[in-house]
Amino acid sequence: MTTETASMPARDLESAEDIIIAENVDKWFGDFQALDQISMRIKEHEIVVVLGPSGSGKSTFIRCLNRLEEHDSGRIVIDGIEMNDDVRNLNAIRSEVGMVFQQFNLFPHLSVMNNITLGPRKVRRMPKLDADALAMQLLERVGIPEQAEKYPAQLSGGQQQRVAIARALAMQPKIMLFDEPTSALDPEMIKEVLDVMQELARSGMTMIVVTHEMGFAREVADRLMFFDEGSLVEEGTPQHFFENPQEERTKLFLSQIL
Image (cartoon, rainbow, N blue to C red; front, side):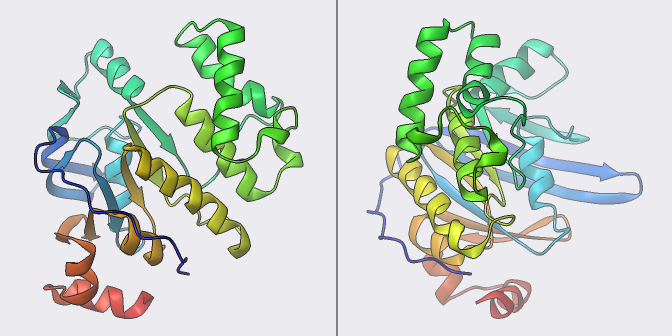
C-alpha cells in the first residue's frame, strides 16, 4: 500500500556528522548467515528507509543497532560509542536509541499514561509530575491526548502504535528505529501512524525505517537501502531507486511491490 504524503523539503546533510557507523557486520543464526558484511554510515538527522523481502536481514540489522541481536563480527558505533560487551556502553547506546516494533508491545495492565512514563521514571529517574507532563506533550504530538487514561485493549491498532511511538520518544532518544511499524495495522489506520512518523522526520530526528510503504519512502527518505539474502544490495536516493535502480535484484523487487 502507498500513502499520499506532502513532500518533504530537501535538506542539506553534507555537514552533518555520522551518528551510526557499521563496518563489515556479520550475524549468524546457527548455519544461517543473516547479515553478510554490512557496511554503512548514517548521518545525524538523516531518514533512511530499508527495503527487502522477508528474510533479507533488514530487521535483524536494525535489531543489532540496539543489541536486541548481538552481531558476530564487524563494528557498530552509535553516536561515537562502540557496541561491545561493556554494559556501560550498551546502556549508553540504548538511552540514545528508541525502537518501535511491528507489534505494539504495550503493557496491557498499564494505562496509556503509565506505559509512556514507566521508562522515564524507572530508567531516567524522572519525577512523576515531570514524566506525566512529558507524556501528555507526547500524546498531543501523536494526536491522541484524550486516550491518556485508557488501557491498550481499549484502543485501535493505529492508536496503540502511536502510543508505542510516544513511549519510545519519552526516553528522548537521538535515533528512532522502526521495524515495519504499519504491517500489523488495518489499511485505514496506516496513514495516521505514517503522519506521526513524517512529523518526526520534519523535526530532525534521525530515523531508520524498515517498511514497504513506498509513498512514505518516496516522499520522506533521504536514502533507501535494499537488502537481500543478508547483503546490502543497493542504496541511493528515492529518485535513484524509483527512476533508475541499477541492480537486477532491486528492479525485480520494485516491480513486484509497485
